[in-house]
Image 1 (spheres, rainbow, N blue to C red):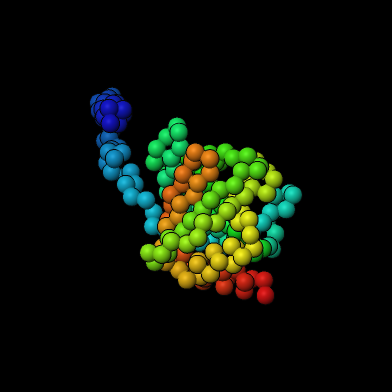
Image 2 (spheres, rainbow, N blue to C red):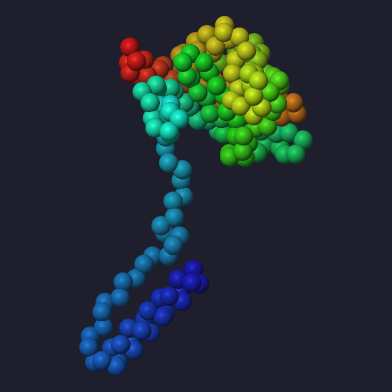
Length: 196
């Protein structure tokens, strides 16, 4: 605000000096509202948390292979932090779900290739069994369901729609987030229409 006032005063002084020295009419000064007036105070409204995107080849070019991705916010806690910002991406690629956890919203959760994560869902007030996610031999990779029947169960849960409360645990870390499944079935049908 101080800088804005300095610029406004300098502009006014220059205009007065120009008018006084040349005798010509000054150019009309344009005043702007303070910077706070232009600041966006609300987050944009996202119409659907589920989107269709396409894989890329070795050159970084998009292929015709579509997949579904959802982005969800939550919190995580461990021995170093409590209720910190979490972003979770849920991918559905070729019949496989992949979960990517970003601690503080931008750092991949650290885990080792043989670590298993437990994940449990609450749907319509009912708690599901505990599922196991695994990195399939890669440290810090996206986590996937260990068993095929768990993929089918989670797919059915998502197709029902609604909000799915989620708790995931690995080591000393605990992740809490909600999955909005309302548009998943519609997005899945659109994705399937791309690849009949």
